[in-house]
Image (tube, rainbow, N blue to C red; front, side):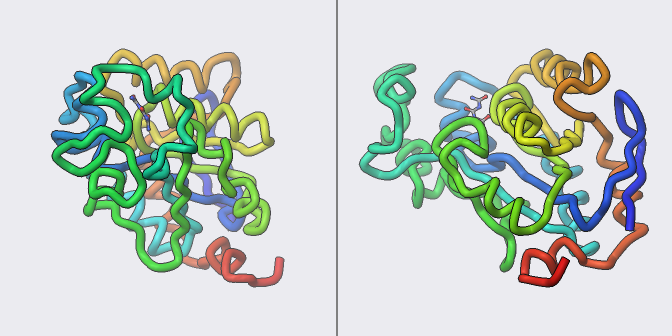
Length: 237
Ligand code: TIU
């Protein structure tokens, strides 16, 4: 079963069974007032634009039985997995580990670290806790993808130029075909969002492809075989 949809720099046909939806860091700390994103001086409402289309795509992926993986950026409460050079940036009261309205900023287990309710993972969906911007760095993401026979990633989330771009570059170097779903990503800086997408699809798709959620959802609606999730549950290839 193939998913065929419009994309840039050229249309794509990918094997559904080898494709996963990867949702990057749709966490309260980035999207809600009082979190890490706002403490860095950002207008978090800009990120909210990605939520409704991503919810539609997530529902379609679940309906089709596609493998869904969520990531969260954050650190251990004792900060032993956070480089001092990462912590020391910004006002001391607004640094990683500092107390905020949603608990300690970017600390695992705190309310702000969790995924927003609209896109909350359901049973069977892997959640990858990552200490860096890229989802492959010091995580078991690649192991999961390998065991599930995944070759293609539909990548969504925040922010386009930081964690989405870093993850796509990591994935591209590891041989994955990345399709970034443009309206399901967002940035605190609209110009960075636009350029972040352009960088991916430039030079014949130097890092991957860019597609609209409408086209991906339409392609997903034509399938409901649930193969990639079956693989994830130990099904034979
Ligand atoms: N600050 C910013 O734009 N992003 C991050 O720190 N992390 C993610 O992008 N997830």
